[in-house]
Image 1 (tube, protein in one colour):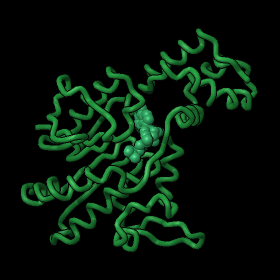
Image 2 (cartoon, helix red, strand yellow):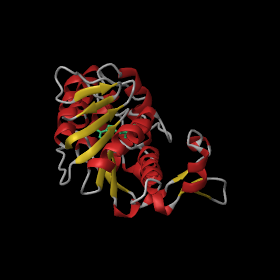
Image 3 (cartoon, helix red, strand yellow):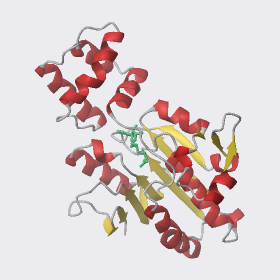
Image 4 (spheres, rainbow, N blue to C red):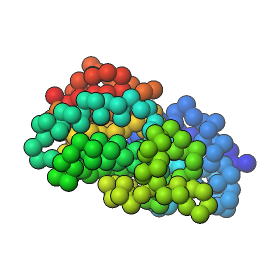
Length: 270
Ligand SMILES: C[S@@+](CC[C@H](N)C(=O)[O-])C[C@H]1O[C@@H](n2cnc3c(N)ncnc32)[C@H](O)[C@@H]1O
């Protein structure tokens, strides 16, 4: 087993913090446990050698590393309070006040697509059945740092277990059953969503600002300062009167953020 020395650990922590916002300062055992075999398989003999390879900016290596150190765990209709809030507060408000009839939604840290596709279904269901559907232009941008998960997201094929929380009507309307008993997202839903690789540590260039940003269960990896920087960037990318949704197990420093707290895990730009 390749051992992680004290110096290598410090260098690793600093590099991952600076470039990916991932706080590994208390994760020494996790780093050694999850990467040691990988390093050996690559024919390398030390963490130092591995980190030098990462620093050469090989995207495939970086994706593999992030996948090893973070979790992509997600499922359809996760934390449904947010979807209720969309249907009960945001959509009725937009229906009344949004003269341009455009909705721009961002799922930041979308993993394998369950979150943005859930959003697409919620939008489709709401606007199709509230009339005037054809005059609305709804765009969902879904981003993740990991290219691997985005490949799965674009394929849009899921197990029965992952869709089990969805209402039965959604399961019937928005999926096509495949020959091997999987469930593929209907093309009508796929067309709402555009997937892109994006590292939240990078500068956000939002030509069109967002009505709603979902950044849920992503910032768990970030320390306080990184989290605040990202939240500030998300704020700039939010339209006035727009919202930020974070995971229910996450917090943002209310006194330091410009967003106004609305209710647990829901923030608003006023
Ligand atoms: C646990 S999943 C959350 C998925 C979904 N938002 C949800 O709540 O179910 C976290 C995702 O954040 C992504 N992630 C981690 N660090 C990131 C970063 N710096 N920039 C963009 N995405 C990141 C991971 O690749 C992973 O897919």
